[in-house]
Image (tube, rainbow, N blue to C red; front, side, top):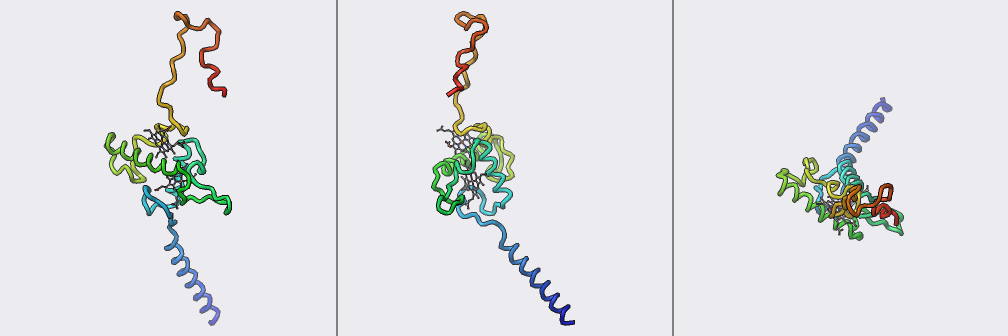
Length: 157
Ligand code: HEC
Ligand code: HEC
């Protein structure tokens, strides 16, 4: 009889404790100026993976690595690229709302017409100019047949 009582008591305390902990669970991000404050971990991970993938960089391109603690400090604003990224978030939201009539363009679920990848395509510094067209074969002044097109070596640095 006593044993069952203790078992029940344990059960009740475990349930109530898990309740307290799940209530306190939503991650508390410390330094959000643009993203919604109630963003959950999955949404945050997804946004950040999009950023990194769109620019072709790792998290530490925008986030500070604390050498002493040997860990990332995601809330810190020590890396200037993080603030540039905030401006880019505003720019992207505005392009969508003002020029593409996207509603609630700051919401995480918004169907954006323009995202980071639209401009960045996996690079940090998007090109402004299209590459020059290749010289036409046989055109006056064009390279003779079989010659390497001008600029063929330009990718080697
Ligand atoms: C292009 C820059 C950029 C990259 C790359 C990036 N982040 Fe972020 N991250 C930001 C910005 C900007 C914020 C702050 C957003 C705001 O102010 O609302 C942020 C905020 C965060 C936060 C919230 C910190 C807090 O407590 O306030 C976490 C966690 C985070 N990033 C994780 C990551 C992870 C993990 C990666 C790599 C997968 C990553 N980030 C890659 C720009 C970046
Ligand atoms: C309309 C086009 C456009 C969009 C959309 C855009 N960017 Fe950019 N971004 C640029 C251009 C152009 C530059 C390069 C400026 C330069 O070279 O000085 C740049 C530069 C940056 C840089 C600094 C470059 C570096 O050396 O790290 C960061 C960080 C960045 N963008 C993040 C973002 C993020 C995050 C998003 C999405 C929220 C985004 N950008 C959306 C055009 C865009």
